[in-house]
Length: 118
Image 1 (cartoon, helix red, strand yellow):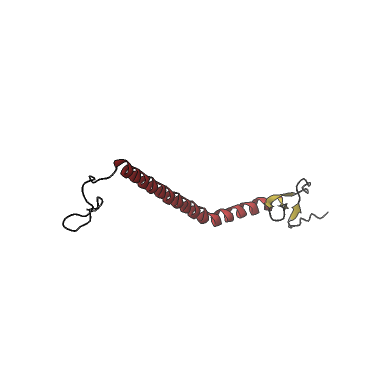
Image 2: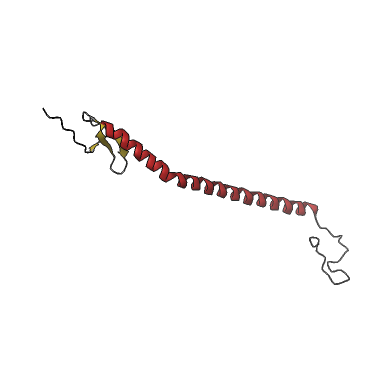
C-alpha cells in the first residue's frame, strides 16, 4: 500500500466540506474562496503570508497615521485662528469708534489717523 500526499492547494467555497488532511491557509477575497493546503503546510504558509503582509504594511500604516495627525493639527490651528479673528472683530465692533466725533480723520501733520497703526 502506497501513501501518496499531493502538495497542491485546493479551493473551498463557504459551507463546503474540507477534505481530509487539508487545513485552511487563508481566505481569498478576490475569488471569495478559502485556500486549503495539506495540514503541516497550511500553518507554515499562513505564517509566512501574515508576516509578509505585516512587514509590507508597517510603513504605510505609520505614514498614514502621521499624515492624518498632521492634517488634524493643521485643521485645529485654522479653527483656532478663525476663532481669534472673530473675537477681535467682535471686540472692535463692541468698542465703537476710537476717535471722538469732533476730531477729523486727518491730523494736522498730514498723517491719516489709523487706530491700528503703530
